[in-house]
Image (cartoon, rainbow, N blue to C red):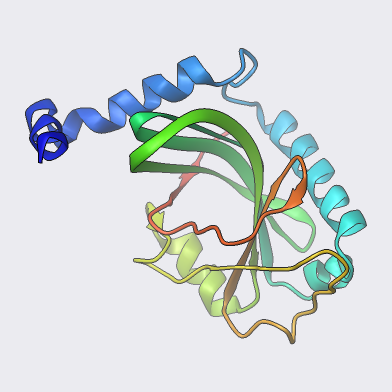
Length: 191
């Protein structure tokens, strides 16, 4: 109850500002807005690493209608507040079509910072079109995103998944399991 009353005293409108400040202070000094060229280079490297380290990834990506790549998503948490932010490129037919950012906030016990790569694979044209038409698309509200749970030595292919959008979350150790993108907001940005 004390936490709830503190949050209401702070005001829900100030929470995003607090989260942004936490990320700014917790993220490495080079965690700034990237240029279009830097995002493209990072996306190329992320996709190359994904294709090299996950069996069947290259064919899986080729069968997709589009791929949204966030090479670096910075996540930070301090006591009961946390947030994450990253910028990425939407690739259609291997070419960058648009740029997006991902932002999410969280409440609950947490402390620390990390960097991860997020890759969203659109397996259905309709899901890709709905995503591109929206202004501020939210995972779990505007559409469902299934986070792939692929273990070491397993392969992926487009027939394995029945969901329209599949997410792969990768940290320094490889694919991460049992995570969610629920509540993450994806917004088109200009670069």
